[in-house]
Length: 348
Image 1 (cartoon, rainbow, N blue to C red):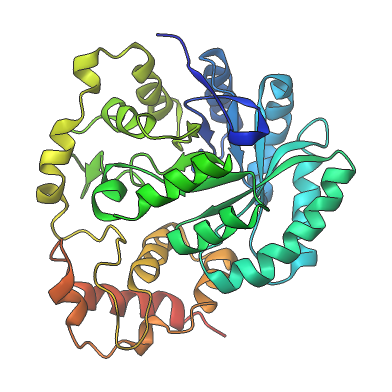
Image 2: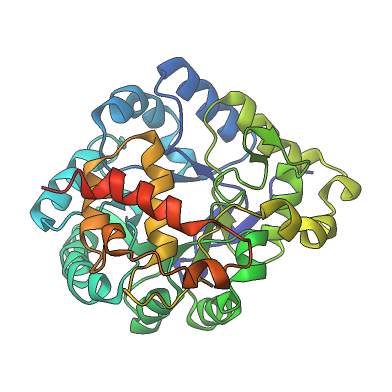
C-alpha cells in the first residue's frame, strides 16, 4: 500500500494521511536525519514542528532544509503570555526552515476560552501580517477542549485544527462527533494528534498492551481527519508506524480495541474529565495531564499553562467526588497531591 494523500480542509494542500510529529525525537542529529529521511522516502509530507528549544533546532534545522520542498511545515506559534516573545521564537523557527515560510502557523495548546478570546486572537492578528508578507500560508490551532475548539472553528479565523483523536477519546469523549462534523462543514482541516494516546494504547506500566500502531492508525484514519501525527522517539518507533502501509486488513482490524479498552485502562487517567465538576473548580483532567507531561521535566511552557489554571492542584480538599465518578477507578487524590508537589512548589 502506498501513502494516501488527503486535502487539508479548505487550504487545498495535499498532505500525507500519516504525518510526522517531532516533539519526542531524540536530540541526536544522526537519528533525526535517519527518521526524517525514512519518513520522506515513505511519502510522509506533513511535519509538525516545535517552536523553541535550541538543541532541537541545532540538530534538526540543517536536516529539515534538505527535504523542505517535499514537506508541508506546521510551525508552532508557542504559548507564552508575552506575545512579543512568541513572535521572536516564531521568527527564529522560520529562519531554520530553508525558505522562511511555513504552510501552517499553529497556535499551540489553546485549551481555555479566555486563552482563545485574548492571547490567540491577538496572536492571529500578528500572523495575518505574516500571511500578507508571504511568510505563512494558513493559520491553525492545537487544543484539547471541545468547547474552545468549536469556538475557534466557528470564528472562521483558523484553517486547521490539531486535536487529539484515538480510540480512548472517541469512546469516552462523546462530544467529539460534533467537533468532526463542524470541521467538515466549515472546511477546517483536522490533524489528529496522539493517535496512540501518548503511548498509553501501546504500553502500560512499561508492558506491551497487545494493541498495535496499525490498529490505532486504522481507527483514527477512519475518522474525517486530514492527517495524523504520531511522534516517534527514534527510527524503530517510526518503522512501527510505517508498518501500517503494508499491514494486512487482519492486522489493522481494531474492533478488539473497543471491546477491551476499558479493562486495560483501569487505574489509568485518560483525562476524559468524567470526574467533573470539581467542587473546587479544578480542571482535574488537564492538571493530571500536565503532571504526566512533567515527568520529562517541568518546562517554562508547562508552568505557563499550569499558572493559567484558576484553581490549582493544591486547592484539592480530597472530598473524593472525582474518585466516585471516574469510569476507570483512578485513585485521583494521590495523583493530585503529586501534581501539587510538582507545580505548586515551583510557582514563584
